[in-house]
Amino acid sequence: MKPPDSPQIVAVAQFCATNDVEANAAICIDLIAQAARSEAKMIFLPEGSDFISGSPEESIALTHSHSDKFLKSLQDASIEHGIWVSVGVHQKIPSTKSRIHNTHLIISPSPPSQATSSSPRLFIPAATYHKLHLFDVTIIDGPTLKESAVIAPGTEVIDPVETPIGKLGLAVCYDMRFPEISTELRKRGAEILAYPAAFAVITGRAHWEVLLRARAIETQSYVIASAQFGQHNETRASFGNAMIIDPWGIIVARCSESPISNIALAKIDLERLRQVRRDMPVFEHRRTDIFS
Image (cartoon, rainbow, N blue to C red; front, side, top):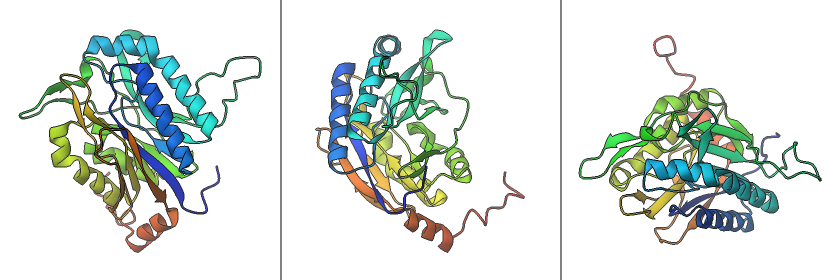
């Protein structure tokens, strides 16, 4: 894919998913349409866009009963509106029915090559990343969350994806606390880092913005962090504050705190990125003789 020769508009999204997969799909499709009307080349939807459940058992049941239909509906919307989509979802693992993956998918608006005029269009993502770092924590004055009770961790960092906005590195939510993955993605050529998230409220207030700005500054990359927001069920709430940060660490777009699903827009300017990297060539100064 040819690199963009001018700044490209992107949309970062924020909404409150529940255990109603069809309702969540309708929200995502509406957000995709909003972004396309705003002339965005790509929209970033949050972690758990398919659902936020109330238990591990419900997560497994919803993934096995609804995953394929949900993904197909997003692919159809991507194709209809001519826009790329980044989205966090749950995915089945063929070898087991007791665990699932927390997955970051990239969907291209180009129809999959396997589709024909006489056969249904299959869901085929442009890229698939399974979350490496699982959120197993007891938050002070907050909930205890054990993601590994149902989620199987990924096993690899995947190469940045060629998109109309630049080379995109994939991660998910809690991964942002581990700079090794963002550094590795930058080494592999990433210009943009994407973190679909459903960040806890207490940790979000303390750490969300500073972590994201740190990842942008240290890798000199754009960071796009889509977010769940609000009360999903009796035991689960998310912080929100979906945002886009430039390679100098400046927040260039942020979703509103409205309970209504919404998007924020910004331009990805790769010439600005190249200037930041030229003016302060930190990756050329890395002491790889001491640090791997």
